[in-house]
Image 1 (cartoon, rainbow, N blue to C red):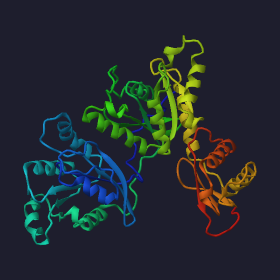
Image 2: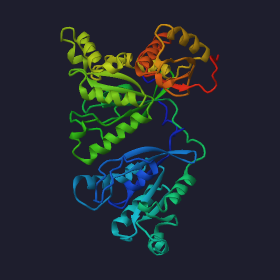
Image 3: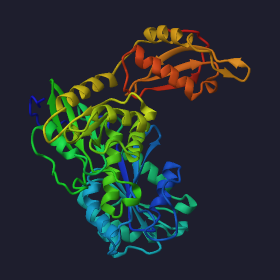
Length: 455
């Protein structure tokens, strides 16, 4: 195992989704705006300061342009741990977004905390607009907005409760969004996740061949996600070491909340996830929940059993461990896994070879003619699904442009194809095209053409 060439930083993001963050002090209407723009209720709205205690991200689309909208915790001068953390960390966090929407309270006017927030917005260098909320009467717009022009010309009068000003906010965001996708980093993007203190940073350092990550016996030493490019077998990879994912009930301070957000965000933006588990402990229910989250995000995944050198004196250690993986990860029964030891270097070649194999499988392309030959051979093996009193009739199968590979089957009654039948087809797909360990998806759609087959 080696990183053959040390290249410079990877190219900037390509096809990355622009990110828009809503900022402001508590109880000015940030979460209300978030819920309106995303048409959801993911942010708790309550007439009480400091209700939002987390960072929430949701994909949005405005007139054909997509972006991620982020609702942040309110920035205050309070002295509790979370408030202090938000105030201290917000400038760093906002460097990861592209545009800002600063929400102010028009009834209160400009207050010292607003000035502090707007100074932070200016320091980021990102474009931002000021939305002065709670202006319920049109004739008060200019008067209430006047004192906010000190910080820029993009000032919007609004009343979220009355849905006033929303179209102006949407128009401002739409104008700022690029017409074409941004540039993305070349190379397979790999995220390392897992519970605290399972050896993520140690494995990261071992793979990179140099000590870039802080390693400590104290759980939770890593609180950020750091990107590091490396080369293996002439292929570029981008490795992300993330903070440990604790159980939600144990996230007692804001640092862990932000770290958890960054971990989940790293998973979402990754192509492949290495789920690190403690080789001395074996997979736990929490590990299963993390894996479930990775699979639901449709990411390639490899389970890495680190510290396996500590179990070598245990009789039938690996056999027992494999059995436990099958039991705890029963919902993904062919998940690939590797035994490693960051301390001794054992298993690192196996891990990189597995990464290379999974990386290639994630981009597998199968022609429609191959798929249909397979499909019609496969569906003859099992009774056709039934919808009402009618058999489901399949017309053809094709692959989408998604990664990992996903497929669409066209049929006369899609609602008749249940999850067990989907699993049957997916299992056969994996066996036929050597895709075991890859989280495939099968969508079923109603055929519009009625064509029985396509080559």
